[in-house]
Image (cartoon, rainbow, N blue to C red; front, side, top):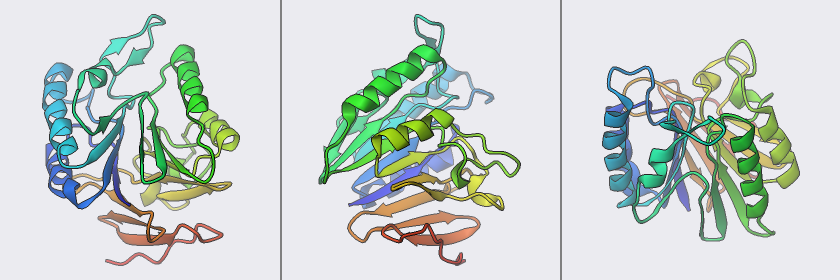
Length: 250
């Protein structure tokens, strides 16, 4: 199974166009949050209309997993916490969004919503605990914020990830977690696009301007992961004891 993962497109239409063009080369595509741009010049309702069309187009070419990020909230729940209600209205075959899951070739995929407070945080924990996957199946999470304290959460100055996600990873033991949110992590000394927490691989492709976006290719048949960006291309072997990263190639 070949997976393409991106995040933090922030209404970058050239990057969405690139994902559309590449989608049918992969068995599954992940967009790990922040599809919209709350600081953009276009209002959110108009952004949502455009992005929803992209999501339907991509999911018409391959399976698509999309989680919300901190830029994607368009409504509030009963506790006045922001949620991406618009994602629940995007209906398309092959599209899985916040709070949904799917299975493909022995892998369970669980898509986590952005949590904005204690109620949505607790709901996410309940969701993941109910999703627990028995061995030997692999389990992959999509969660916008990366786990704290490892390379994928490094801003260049501090770790700015989600500490509670580390606790859930240690409790539930997924095989893979795909995140975004911290744009600079792969591009800063001390940071990275791939890290390990116990037996769990955690990934963050980072954000770059222009097209294509920074992206990760996960090949579960070959047991490899590749990061491609303007900084070059890096490869890892998933079965390696340590997350040693190959030297970048132009």
